[in-house]
Length: 107
Image (cartoon, rainbow, N blue to C red):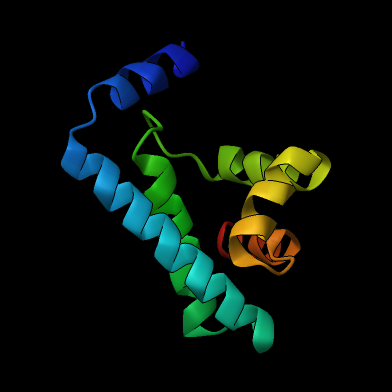
């Protein structure tokens, strides 16, 4: 049911929604690369990364849930395809950092 609702939400995207989501993802990657250079999970930048990833998920998730968010970033570590997606975009390994940020801010 959740996947069905998510697919319906995505199917109703406007071009503007899609562009906003792409821009948010671009900013998320840029910020992950910056945080990777000076890792500090208690920084404003780390909090911003968490907020950006959460907002990015909310584009398609029918309802945000921090437990599901943690489960998703666990999957990023467990499945090389997800890790490759983020790491390739960043051109440096950032998936572990994204995982750690999400865990820090979903206590």
